Length: 171
Image (cartoon, rainbow, N blue to C red):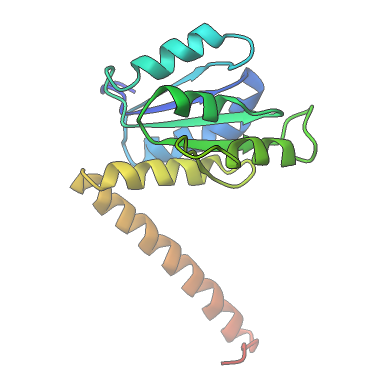
């Protein structure tokens, strides 16, 4: 994106992009500038340390970190910055049904929190990042309110379609 990034999206490997692109797409929809790159906690630890320790001074407000397997990236990044970090556990080829990633991100020690979304839940990570940004940026908050309204209308349309077919739920 052309504007200076305020959200960082990082992932442990190129294969994680299949999931993490959903966070980027949501931020694009909200017109929130972001950067997206690969930062491996295990294969490029110095790059990870540099990325996390410079994030705030580079203007980032939130970091979304996706990782599979042992999934140390979100927690290690959170240990190096005071910015909010949103972890996205990814079901990878070497994963144990994703539980290894979920627990690696979710079970952080006291003092090093990582907000954790569902397995492969990058879109929710993008939404949560936008909500954090929206606490200070009224234009983002307005777009999020419109987004939530659209979700509500979609559900209302669905149950109205069911009711027109004569399928009514119990009250």
